[in-house]
Length: 133
Image 1 (cartoon, rainbow, N blue to C red):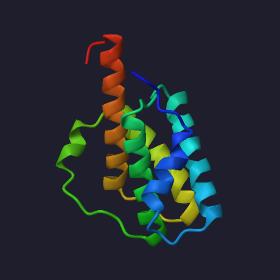
Image 2 (image 1 turned 180 degrees about the horizontal axis):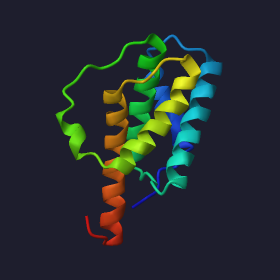
Image 3 (image 1 turned 90 degrees about the vertical axis):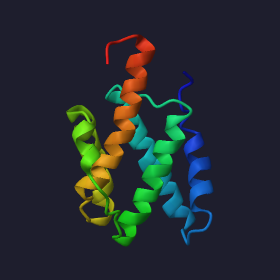
Image 4 (image 1 turned 120 degrees about the vertical axis):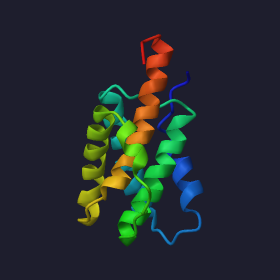
C-alpha cells in the first residue's frame, strides 16, 4: 500500500475548488488545516493510502464548504451503528478542529461520514497487517 503524499493535498484542493469563489489565502489556510488533520490521523494510527487519502481529503474539502455556508447533508443514518467507536471518536475530534473556524457545530451525520472514511482505512490497515477484523 502506497502512503498518501500530503503534497498532493494542494492538487486535490485545486481540482475540487476550481469552480468556487475562494481567495488564495483561504486555500492556503485550508491546505494547512487538511495537512494538520491528516497528521492527526497518522498520529492516531490511521495512515491513509494513495487511494483513500484523496477521497478523504475531497470529502473534507466538501464538508469545509458546507460548514462555511452552514448547509449540511440530511441523510439516513441507519449505517451509523456499524461504525466503530474509535472511528467516531476520531471523527468528533476532526469535526471539532473544523468547527472552530466558523463557529458552527458539525451535525452527527456529518461526523458519521468522516468516521466511515476513518473506519474503512482502519479496516484496510488491519487487513494489510493480517490482523483479525
